[in-house]
Length: 66
Image (cartoon, rainbow, N blue to C red; front, side):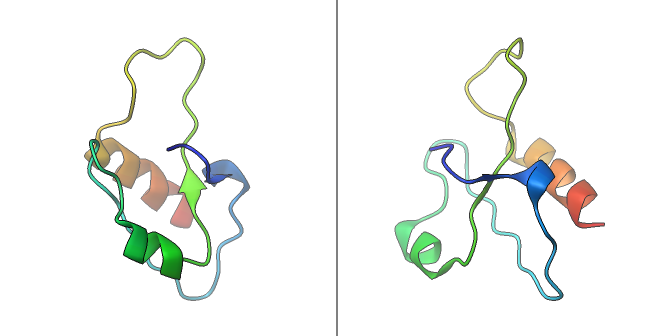
């Protein structure tokens, strides 16, 4: 589900771990329950498809973290 904080508003912490889930199942509840923050990459209104490819999501996340 896309219910996390918008990645563009992310305040980077000194130490972070990025966990990426697969497109069908996402991240398991055990990891989500231990997470301090959940982020979402919002797509534009005109984009097609239900979700981003995990490799594309990773590239976007790493862009924001560097």
